[in-house]
Length: 271
Image 1: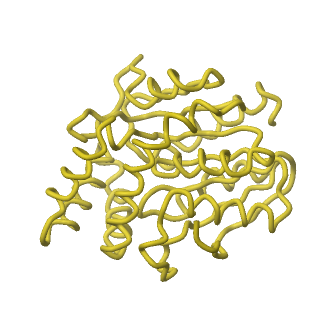
Image 2: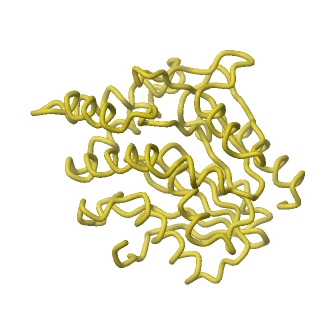
């Protein structure tokens, strides 16, 4: 791992445990604003913007899931956090697992929001498919399509357009590095690290992806691919499933998401 960097972040509220909320690929800490506003009424909440995001100038060669997590761990230690619930959205679910792996003494619970397995058990095929889909000048059109299909329904058009615009501002080399490293983590480390989790775990899921990579909303009473993976690896996992919504669960259904987090935290002595 490389030297850690100081992350841009919000730090609001007081009360234990501290909630550390980690965003997804091509996103930033503002995706957690509804949870920051709600949870900070009774807890300290920290929302960092990860290395390589927000125009911080990070070298693309440093954008591994391990380095993203080590920055978060360094931020937690610098702020004196010793009792944390760490939540991650999308790519951030890998960072959450790495934070728990690197600093288990700091993490008392984890929350995984609409995660996925981007390698589907075959890293070489996944990387080859990504390289073919993004060759020449196809990277940004691929990214735009990836984000546009995360939203369903006219009511989220403004949110979709804002998220797409932000994603397209990511430097090409950062995007390639992050996505490749995410697939690599899924295929080479995900199983072992996820099986080692021994703290309360909440999986919040609203979409699923098939092996073709296409994302769709969960159907009523459907669990989906990622929750099935977590269930097979983590005996401590509990599930909150939301049908008929897109990938940005915490922004599309903030009250439902906040209630799911608070109920789970109280049930497990974390609230």
